[in-house]
Image (tube, rainbow, N blue to C red; front, side, top):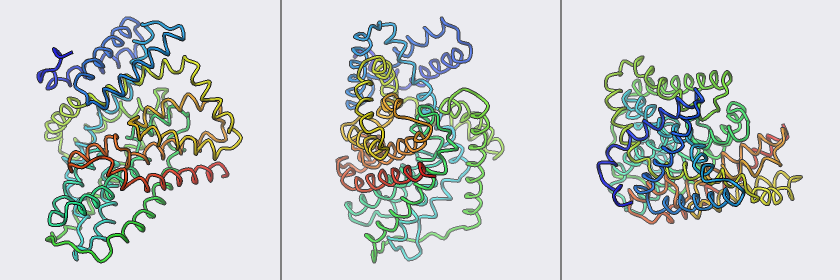
Amino acid sequence: MNILYNQSILRNFFYIYAVLFILFLIYFFSGIGVLGTLVDYLAIGVLIISWVFSTRLFKLIGGLFIIAGALFTLTSGGSFGTIISNTTSNLPLLLFFSTLPWIGTVVKVGGLDESITEMIQDRANRVEKIYGRSVVTSYFLAVFLNLSAIYIIQQVLRELFRKTSVGFRNEFIIKSTLRAFALAVIWSPLEVIVGLTVDSTGVSYFTLLPWLLVTSIIVGLTEVFLTRREFNDITLDAPFNEIDRQALGRSIIKMVILLISFLSIVMVFNMNSDLGFVMTVALIIIPFSFATAFIMKRFPIFIRTGWETWKNHNNHLQNFSVLFLSLGIFSGGFNSSSVPGVMQQVFGYVDSFLILILLLIMAVIYGLAMFGVHPVATLAILAEVLVPVMTPENVLSIGIVMVVCGMGISAAAPYGINATMTAQSMGINPYRITKMNMGFSLRMGLTGILIAMIALMI
């Protein structure tokens, strides 16, 4: 393994992904058997190389998934060939995650993110006002920039709060950015968990959308009300920069048009194709981003910036490659074993009480997240386990809870990418983030269950 660990491979990892995705897309649309076998073995190669460069946590998770998945497959009568072919089942998810930087680049090169960060300021530097504005700004940017939004807003807030104590600054940043991110992406078509839920439950994204928006708004308003009181009568020692409100207004209008256009295109393609939601969004992101940059007359800088951003993003995608590819091995083996039957029996005991099913879903997602199991992996398992208890009447409610709980725990999961990235930049233990945000995650999950029960009755 050590022979693979060199910086040359790491700097050129994007080429490996590019070859894998191009061959996968050709196979996906052509169905050529030989090409499918080539993609299977290439995916195994990518998994091995990615594992070498991944962090210790993802090596552990990936290793457990591979061992468990292989054992499940072999003891169920499968072969090593089956194990290899299972690796590619989550390639659409990996492709989707790979293309995300392009739409984020459109927002950046258009100057939209810089204008919106001006919304954070308060003329009197009242911290409770800055908190509310930080949440709104983080929320708005997260819809488009996903994880990049957390980094952008945290950098702005770190500079704004540079004269405060480290503990106070960290608490403010953690609460205002990670909570807003969780609230924003529960309804974003760019969120992996949303796409995974849509594909696994069969519920249309546009059926889920209004319920997810209502949940997001209710929890968001509640959190701003509750948390702002913690910062009452506190002011900052920071300069105030005058805001060009006309430029800010134009930026907001552009962002709204961008969002509506993207959602409209996704809806049209999703209704008129059998690609699946995740695959549809993954295929739309790049051409939509290119077309938008051209219309905004920012195409040359978009190409330069987007290419570098995409390369850098894919050169550091090893953790997610290990997660998604090993999860494919695990899911395939798990589904062929007797374990889903046992778990289905557990859910079957409470299948007459939807509220208990929803609480059990939340408990599984939140509990496993505390041990480093990504909600994407948990939802992939639950998608199979819940099949017997899903009915046309309750599937919408189950879908709502899967999304809300899957993202709700992201603000508090100690090994999640959001908390890990924030903890590393602040130099703190990720369990401090869990302590600060666990109450929020529980409130968000329980609110999602309440909304899901209302959806059942309407």
